[in-house]
Image (cartoon, rainbow, N blue to C red):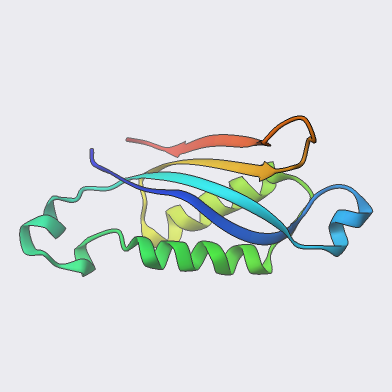
Length: 117
């Protein structure tokens, strides 16, 4: 199976457990990999047969703009479910990093895989 990926997509959202976090927007960094059969798009040079990563990025940004979660785990699960349904993605890996959440670390977060290859 082929894979389409998006690396380092930054989105702003309301995320966190502390009261002060509920009043601000914070940056999350996303790295995603999707299973996708690229052969039909490559054979015809037809964007409609490809996984349009510009549309995927726009949908992720819209999701983040509306989201208000306490846990990064919840953000990751809900986003994965949405992407798989809306874009008919059979498998994805999503790494979500919350930069600066722990002062001694560049970032913390979760990495999940959903679906079947």
